[in-house]
Amino acid sequence: MEDFLNILSKILEVRKPWIIEKIEVHHPTKTVNVFIDFEKDSMFECSKCKQPSKVYDSNYRTWRHLDICDYRCYLNIKIPRTTCKKDGVKVIDKLPFGRMNSHYSFKFEQLIMNRIRNTPVSTLSNEIGEPDNNLWRVFRHYIQKALINIDCSNTTKIGIDEKSYKKGHKYVTIFTDLDTGNVIFVCEGKDESTLARFYEKLFDMTGDPNYIKLICMDMSKSFISGQKEYFSWVEVVFDKFHIKKGLNEAIDKVRKKEVVNNESLKKTKYVWLKNPCNLNANQESLLASFLTECSTDTAKAYKAKLEFDQLWSVQQNAVEPLLNEWINRSLNLNLYPINKFIKTIKNHYDGVLKAMKTLFTNAVSEGLNSLFQLAKYRARGYRNVNNFINMIYFTGNNFKFDFH
Image (cartoon, rainbow, N blue to C red):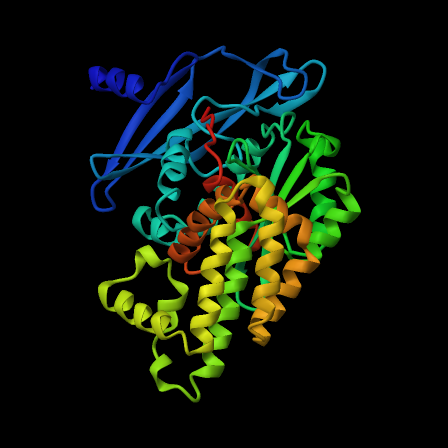
């Protein structure tokens, strides 16, 4: 038995002044209770002044540890209270096995954080038999601890995007460092105030709003208003994905209006919206026949889309005159959804032009967005917005957690 205790001491990393007092195994409940005491006459730091102090008294507390051979393992640790000449009787505030205000050992918390990356908290709760509230508490602790180390001292290019977390227009706004690809700030809402909060938060992250040189975002009125108010000196580039999305939506509106009198356009939505290289053989053939005849407004709008796509691959000096030519030519189609899209382009002309010239996109943010969507899908939505925000930080960064 003594040899086994020595082996277990090494496995559990029990070192002086701590010693394993005894082990109790309960087969009906498949649990192992390890009782850890401290050596006689041990001294511990006063939790306030940190001076070595004698033990006043002690009491057992329990932490769940990693399972041992399918048996749940609990560490029952005798926690001393010190008697300090300066500060009186105090409970110690540090243990080598786990946090004082946690239900779990450091090793078990490490297991939780590793599993949460790919497993919904509700599923993990069922698998390990622990309340999901406790797991979220552990998760929030380590994320908040990691956020302290976010450094924006070299941040100059920002991507801004929003993500819904619940039905009913409930959103969070996500700020990404486009050079590192890391999420640096997330807050609830998608209005002008989100940029105000980011402006203030930058100072806490050793950043400076005046160092920001470029912002890539969609054409949201609230984002534009916030940028003009708090980052007026910054170059704005509107995201290519959102620009082209607006044109796709316009084409689909043309098709929806026309399909009422033209049944051949039924069930062709994705023929017009897909990237040509992603069409299957039947879709390619159908699209070719429409474009050859070019008798429908939808086909004419689609040709305008193909011409618009080519503007992203021409030389910088040629972008502006070719964009103006495209606007004039497309207006002649006299299609209301296309005209409305062109009006949007004109209202945001400089940002669209810079996007075409610089080819700077919010692709980093959009790529992360798919990961956030996956996390949201796995969790089947988030009732608690703070949990969703913390999950975005977790997914959008490569945090290194310190479990000790």
